[in-house]
Length: 340
Image (cartoon, rainbow, N blue to C red):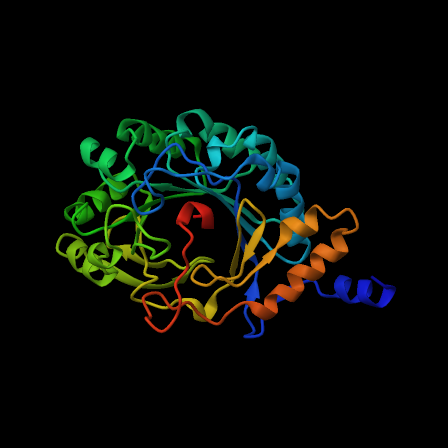
């Protein structure tokens, strides 16, 4: 790369796509493995990537550092389950010290939080999202296939005690599985002064034990159910993610709705994903991507080359997803391969 090209990269300090959207938030997957096998995320008999195909902790850190140098201010660590990655705390501690990073977040199933909540807070993690889809132990095991509800509940309490800036529960509501627990899940969050988001099931990959079109519950329906007990107040508040929040009258908790199936929230998308194998996904619902692993492992490629690849990727970031649009091909990758 000549000096003119290097200068152009150095001057491009922000990632802006061809629709004028500024990308300042990345979801960085640190593993495709998980200690659960949730029915909406994985098949029961999963084959995981061999170690040689996944990014090392050093490579993950380099990607994160270069993104922050291009204006990214928020990093969410995802998986799989991030906390099952060997020595992941060493990566989290380094990310927490990155200059310019304003928020370091984690999405987890909660089963490891009794052990990790305090170290995560000390390492600089600001906010945690904890997945919980049922408050009934047997039903929870059915949905997660192997998870123990008591460990997740203890993890929620440990996170609450650790003093994070924000804790949010995530619940995927599925007809035939847990649609009768909408109110009880909301109550559980409200009683603890934490937020909860209800998520329409993502149509990513083929589920092994149900048809997604049969199980998906719209968030409009979920809201109607909650409003039978609580008064919800619309809010103009926006977050860096796709959640649309309402306030619960007289309570500290907020309720969020993430509605990829019934509401296209792409117009202000500020996010990209990096899978653990180094694939930069420009959209959750499309296959537009860039192979960052090849660049990271090319001895001739330095940070200037990596930055240019990220800048150039903005030109292939699509305008929107097309979930359940029969005229468009749907992604075949499962959620654990995508990064939650």
